[in-house]
Image 1 (cartoon, rainbow, N blue to C red):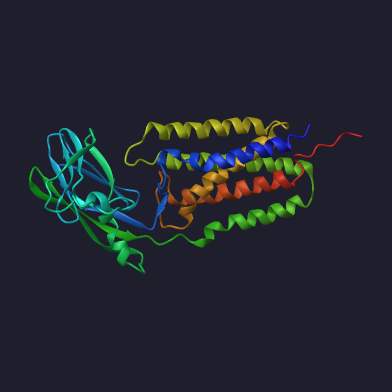
Image 2: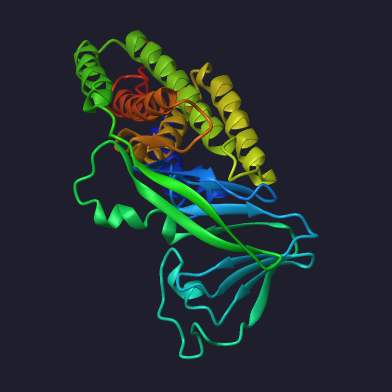
Length: 325
């Protein structure tokens, strides 16, 4: 019985669902790499401060007994941390201009307007998109590796003036030599496929599937163990799913009847993970829990193994069955 049509249909379904599901915990637009890195140099000792996602977001945690006001672009009250949680001033122009996708502030928003507070969290830590971290990147038209300049976020702690200070740095892109495994592997694969050897195709399918699964799990490991700044239960759930999926595919690829199906499913999922991590081959700073070299090796390995596996399965002889004479 030939399982190729059913296998191809299932693999196509996985292609459609894998890209959004590969790292669904992170949400749309969550970066995996950045060209700029913002670093906190000084901040009030009474609060905890961290930069998240390179230069995009700022995280702040304040003790419940302390009232912290984060001031906006014009010095107006923007965010408030107190015993009741965190609130945002809906009459602050910064509330609308400081979003990932800025919108025009309403006419009721202004520097001298009485604050209108809306509670956004009952917790005592909060993370928000902060344009002041990377404002200097707009002026650095031809940045050179290294520091670009300082940034400041003004605060008020129980009415006393304070501030968070930091610097913005440009990181040089990685070497284009990181992509060399892809053309080399595909050239070697093309030579092997010309032999039309079923045993060789089966061995290649098994090995490439295992490599693709290893890259998939490694990619999930880096993304799901990267705190922003902490870990969510969904992140550990997706990591568990990736490990379970890999174990299932390893069991199936060892069975001749299911080898093609397991190879196609593994390749399509690895391709989704590799494309999700593609930015680590372009930007200077990777934003995962793994070292930068492992991130880049994972991305190119996932894409290469996925492409090679699909080539072997769709053009090789592993799915062809012949009746014995």
